Length: 78
Image (cartoon, rainbow, N blue to C red):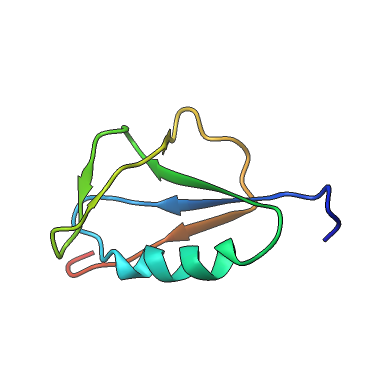
């Protein structure tokens, strides 16, 4: 990847998900150069994960740019 290339990665959050399923990939991908993250959900309202952690999305599906990678975590009952 050259300095001018950028990879756009989305982490899709939803109520009841397991936060570690997104925190782990975020940590790994953030070490790469030229990565732009979008934390996506239907709204920008806070999301409570299965262990009570609250995540704040910064992008909705409606205003999401074209993506190179989409990560969707799991959780009990998903």
